[in-house]
Amino acid sequence: MKSILALSILTTACTLHAADAALTPAERAHAIQLLQDSQKEFLALVDGLTDAQWTYKSAPDRWSVGETAEHIMLGEALLFASVQRAVDSPPNPDWETKTRGKTEFLEKVMVDRTHKATAPEAIQPHAKISREEVIQRYKEQRARAIKFIEETEVPLKEHTVDHPFPVFGTLNAYQWLIYIPLHNLRHDQQIAEVKSSPGFPQ
Image (cartoon, rainbow, N blue to C red; front, side, top):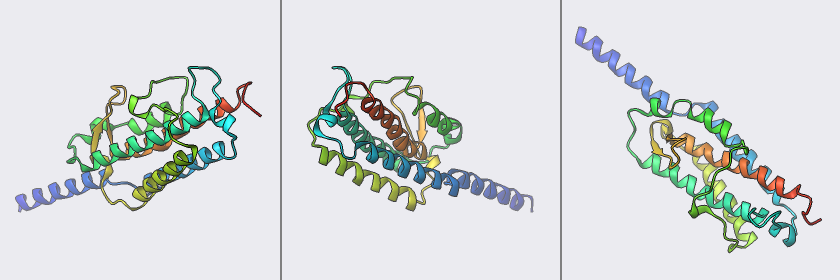
């Protein structure tokens, strides 16, 4: 009887642990909202720009609107690949400890442009992609991310991949997913800064 009771308690504990790793309806809705809102903001910021406005740089070492848009698009592809790598990895038994507080941390630091960072070479813009292709690829990638978070039943929080920047450390698949719109929002601010600079073509 005692062993049956112990087994029952263990089974219940395992079930609760698995449930903790699954997305809550609020988490899923929050991720979808972030993806949709950041997309809407980005597309509004780049809509109707002339070629001169798209390529204008406020200084030689600053990115243009077009370069920032290209970086957002390239970054999204890289970040979604990290989501997929996490999902394809075996569950991390230490996921809760390793990723605790990281969602809130990401939401705080990613949109704070007082802290600068150098983008990895793979997502540095080189202005070799047309505006039309940048926007098209952006929309396709965003549609894929939204479809994924709307439909996935994977317990995203127990699948992890380490971030190359030590300040972030281990992130779970959900955190990698919301990194996409947070990164987008960060650089939406950058586009707005370019457009508000004194020399921006009118």
